Length: 90
Image (cartoon, rainbow, N blue to C red):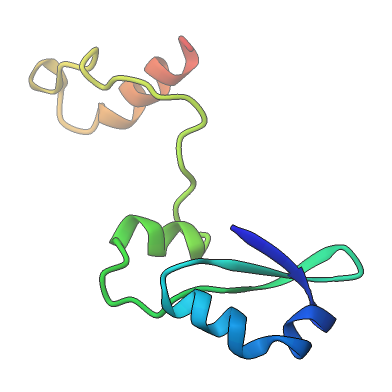
């Protein structure tokens, strides 16, 4: 991802918009702090990516396996407590 300042964007907006149209993402900074991001418009953004950007979904910090949970062995309603148990083991 390219990172540019507001002044650079203002002076070369057409160049950066062409890069975004080509699929690149550009981070815009103001005095060194990221304030915006230019991203290509895409109808093919995955649902997962959209949820992450919206702040609804938080990606796992470390990959884990749910294979340790045997759902068929659990009484109805105990899945949440079993998930909590597996998380605590990490």
